Image (cartoon, rainbow, N blue to C red; front, side):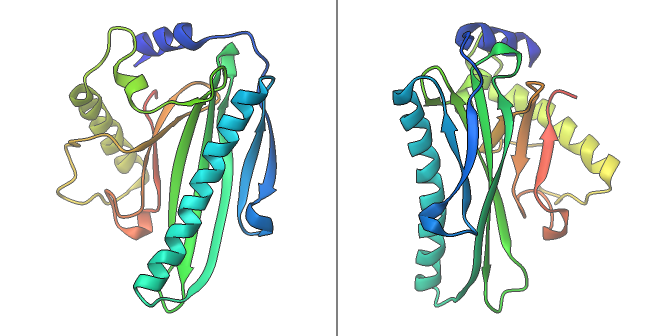
Length: 208
């Protein structure tokens, strides 16, 4: 991971200052909190913020569409966020992790997800998993899956997490990943993706 991460940082490095983040409420709803990002380039700023608002809108619209289709009553909808990397080490990576939760009345518990949005703040482009496989010498997805399988197994052993029998070895990477402030790559496994609900959302640091 480190060899091509260094190549990635060389590719997208810049001397701009870190982004400034402030919270806002989606459509004035105090339960729907999302970040507003400020950078020097206003065109880039608009592009980043449009992507963030689109993600919140996708979540909220999906909740109420699902309720309508399945005759459910929404008991509560919440979003929050935290920032992983914000141009740590003079790079231009901004990682925003959105936590999205919905509770349908009569359900046993809320359903919660984490969505990671990784931005190149010099361009405003979203950075998907191809940045982990195509940069520098490149590492095949199969090799990343093998290494992540070992990381997930080690975390489950440390934290006494029960994993479903049929999930290992991993055959594909999780959709959501982010960089933290030390530029470690984290992969996010959603509820029920690899373990029962009680395990919650599982965050695996690939670089420890």
